[in-house]
Image (cartoon, rainbow, N blue to C red; front, side):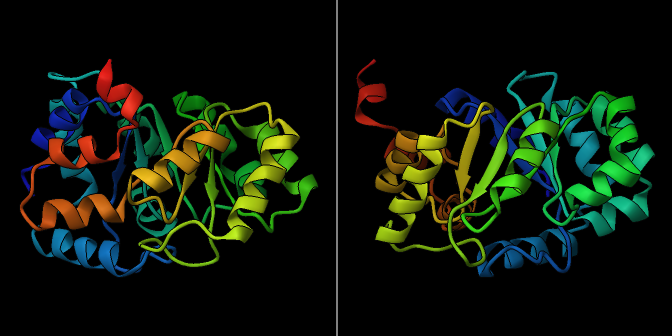
Length: 233
């Protein structure tokens, strides 16, 4: 429970570009076994939104790396969305990801609160997202879009398949005018290189949690992911 600050500082020193800081939830709908388990452990250890925001304030005493809070809508709604966004901004958050907040609900009910807090929301989309809906997300995006690259939960450990390559190429050729980060299935140097080839980077969650869960160092994981060109700089 108390390792958050040290982990973020070490990630910053290891050369990551931004950090997605998760809000543990009992029913993480889009996440696989690893994040389900880590969420369960975190909640049993006493993690809460209030504690996470307190830790974020402490992080800001040591690091100014961009931090995006990721959580499901239920705990944020129960906390109070205006209260949450205001306090998250004050604590030092740079953005929010809420996978189960739809673009329709955002536009109709909640966009004003994000604007008041000056805290942007990043939307998720998949290869099956219709182009008109994707453009709607693009028009509402002030940060980046999160590309869910596989039709599964997080934690996939196999390589990139032909369908993923075809889908990525289609998106690349569309020349979307906002940054896109690829997630779901990014777990090693090869999958990260693929994400970086077609998009603006890759998001790694489950593989990182498995690594530190085995009591291995954060820096060794980041070194295993970095492209060779970065290791030589």
